[in-house]
Image (cartoon, rainbow, N blue to C red; front, side, top):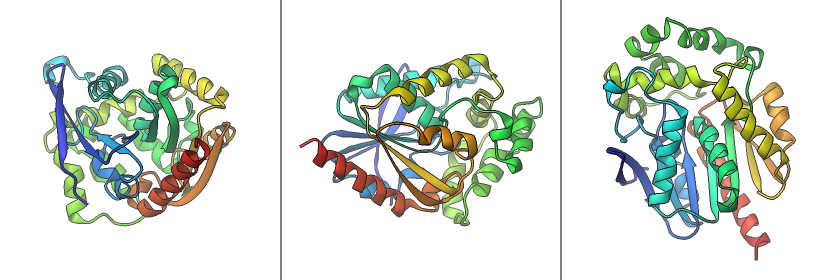
Length: 293
């Protein structure tokens, strides 16, 4: 399903987003290397439950790319976070927010929730970054390529060969994407400079304590959400899953006030089980709404 997008200018850059439905806000955040397109088949399950806001992160989808003059490390967690924070402020999204999170969108959303707990109604997450990781937590078949991304080979693998789109994305989905679907995911990254964001992200995953600032940041929100018992949570577990498995899965299963459902998928589970995900979120949200009456 296609959705019209709106956009706002934030610090000289266009940030694109889908905005459908009415009522209390539901904010859906994607990760690398996707866009709001990832949520296209889940949004229809939710747009009668509230106002659904689905941004394209800076550098992704129809949002602008940061200027090359900012240097090769221009896409940081911190500046991406600020664009999302300013977008929500601009749209006056400031109370009773339900967050629906995936991949780097989860780190952005968990951190935003930690800083704004009074604005959060509920949090749903899937294939998320729930705590710092070790290489032993990483899928064995992915360790080599991600180590490559984080090495001097990364520029060739991603900027030259577009490996995040051409290899990581399709190999992290059980079904085969159609040509039109692949073209939609390729569209924001046709040029080498446009792919920088898809290289910067894997280099910021807190693995074995590095990078240290991201290790501290993810540790901070992991500790906060582990101790929170007030915010209802929905963990959509992926079977067999990709990054939220093993020790990471067991860690988040200990979170309080949490419901868990399991759907079929690897990492980009929205492409394999969109309707199961949409129905699970819808049912969970309706139960929360009844509980608040």
